[in-house]
Length: 592
Ligand code: NA7
Image 1 (cartoon, rainbow, N blue to C red):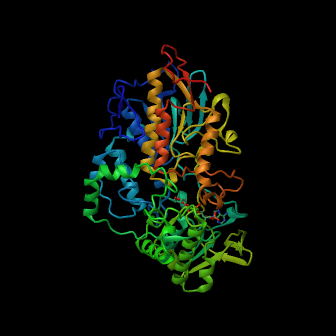
Image 2 (image 1 turned 45 degrees about the horizontal axis):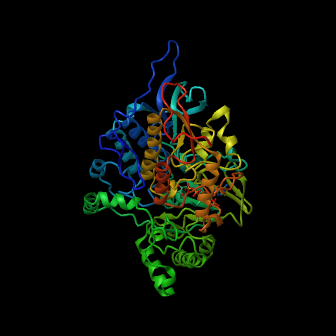
Image 3 (image 1 turned 135 degrees about the vertical axis):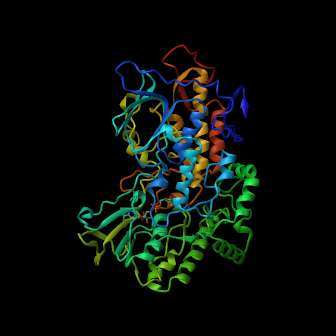
């Protein structure tokens, strides 16, 4: 959409970028502020520093560079890919709407040229795709790997961020884009004696680069979330024995991964505009829950038999269609949710032959209120002779010894411990970065008791800092690549607005943050989500403030943030450019 000579994301989510990576119409609108270095000063200067070379960070680089900005990306890993680089455990694959939807959408060429091979893409395939993306759009020349950002500080006088890296670099930038990942700060449980364990120990979220052999080994796995449930069947195929230490039993639905037929890809490519539009379509205003497209029928208009037939059909089809193709009441109505839980518990009893093991596997929370899981033979794995399940609710871990895991009833000798214990999700990687905002205020201090933010994109007292997939975005419950595109485009348009208006700093008001928090929570409170302990609420991390951190609007979120921009960036305070020379723009520069 072209408004007065510039491009911005409108409420209808018009695409703004060409395949070549230039943002159409912007070449003359944005001037890079790469400065010549003063003598003796080794600081590098950019318009924007992006932290993270994963799905979001790479797109941010591509888009901002396409606007003519100077951009530098830093990532501690030796390769691009972010979460998809680190989560290389056996069985890792996309467990959401997958190929070709789990990919960037902005480039028709990219959609046409990348041949996804499976319906649920494997981690190596996603990583190859991201490597291809980096090459295809010539991103590597602006990405510096094996370089962790150790310090990031805002200077009010110059309206710039100064970043220091593990490699001794000092970098200055007007904008700091934190693409640090929603699932990037691994949660290592503090088990007494864990450092005494003499065997191998690997976390699924930071899996070794070298191949890990399970052959002939007794492997203990702690954790039965998505990662554990993907990894356990694969490990059990190779290991001498697997002992699973389960704290919370989980529902999981068959992934039904299968090879993609070429004609399926062709059909998507031929209808790409419609497919893409469908991914972003605004839910109807009377939607039971905006993130749930549902199947067009209300559960209450059908008989119990009809509902059961739907659950059977969805189970047979597998995939997250079990959630998204279910009744729209699934995540908001106790009665319907309980019916689905009963159905799924029945499936566990059918599959698992030993009734005692089946009982240990029975989940008791509302289905879908923890991240829904897809598996490939998870419950079936407990029918193997080499797999044992320990129910930590009845037999808790007391500590680790040199040889294994000690629970209340005895010791489980193992050669390898796999920690599938998840992440300090959504906020953990920002807290690990701990940027220092106005007056040196630290994010850790700011977020000590609540993760205040505005639109999931910005934080008051942290001018010119933007987050992608931050708390309060639908990030982890939407399509991560598309979400990254849309959030980046919003951020880019905000930057463009500042350049046009001669503005040097932007941040939200605290009042806007509080209102946003209410908005996110009002949506969540309509659902069953807040009633379950999960990483959405922060309950998986001891001592973490309980705060529901996901916007449940799905595509509605993107329409909401577009509306904020269209209405003159309500809730943001802009400060004129400290460098002088530029005039403060029209009615969009406001005070709180
Ligand atoms: P999750 O979903 O957070 O799962 C972690 C699992 O580890 C879960 O079963 C936890 O039990 C368990 N856990 C965590 N800490 C402990 C301790 N101290 N003792 C025993 N068990 C523990 O992480 P994943 O990596 O599986 O998945 C994260 C996301 O990645 C996933 O949702 C997809 O979006 C992709 P709990 O349920 O907290 O009782």
